[in-house]
Length: 319
Image 1 (tube, rainbow, N blue to C red):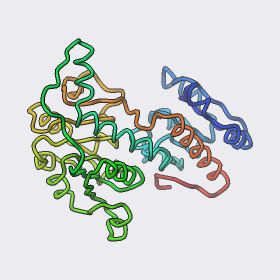
Image 2 (image 1 turned 30 degrees about the vertical axis):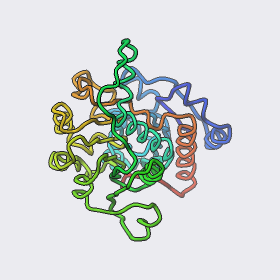
Image 3 (image 1 turned 90 degrees about the vertical axis):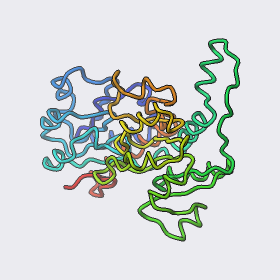
Image 4 (image 1 turned 180 degrees about the vertical axis):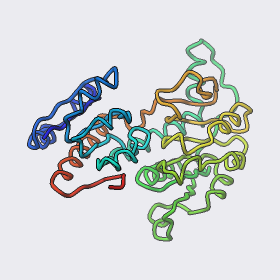
């Protein structure tokens, strides 16, 4: 049996613990590449005889079709849909797994950092100071007593709610799994999605991208937000009508947006948010900490060992 990581990095490789590496080696051979293949042909050569793959980035369909022995792709992340064609994998009988909850605290902290940057205009003031301009300008936004709307109350959303409450914020939430017990547990008030957007001073997104959540944050929802409100997205760009969001930011209808995710990654040069000054942008780094990446590797390895032990876990496609 052969397990391959075809598109890793040296930094991530160093986070693989001896225990996890020994689990992989117990299955057979284990090969790790510290770069991405330059061509599909090179990529296919790396994985053509693999039984299992630990996937850091993406696997093109033409490469996937060449994997006649492959039985499992263990994706390093919560949502592999943009990176692996799940329908093709299912047709080929290849399980695709994810790594849920590996970075709840880190992504929540990054969401709060974007909220603070947007509300306090940190990046704008920093740029101004580096240009030698010392001006306070208009008042910045306060958080105490303001309303935060949390869309999705899973592991990350619940942690954001906890952090926001420490800043004195009132927290509203929308989730498909609302209950009085969960409301009491997390100190939130459950409302409809429409009510959340209408009542919140800041909205932060924490739902998984699925066909059902595709572009769920519509123009109408964005236009229903308070004038001067803030939107933060550390989940997936596909959740939002981003053309509408860009327009509302340009016109000043919304005060700011904090974005860690984009429709195309790496970001294309024609991405509308690159030219919008009140958009605070980071390159999908919410989970980019040593602890989180160590967690993701451990879960990915455990997915592979559980699969070959006959107890599949975290499988996201139909087989």
